[in-house]
Image (cartoon, one colour):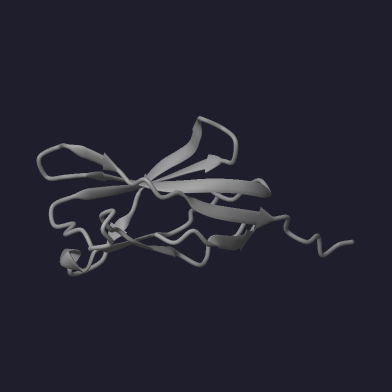
Length: 112
């Protein structure tokens, strides 16, 4: 995952976010049989706003997954962090070290 910031707009539900799932040596993980969660939190908070399932790309050996924003995910403007948690087929959990940065700007009010 890169250390770049993804810029979004409050209330939007597109675009989906596509994640490369990699080991620390940059090789891609085989996600066959795994479950991947996207964890989203407000910058500076220890508590997450949500933890939701990602869709693993086909084939799972590509090492990519994506998350489709849902209504209510981007309710508040501000700075956020995201991370991935992989649950392997044997039930073991691996949280990726790299954090993703998100900036959600306010939606412009068309009535003003």
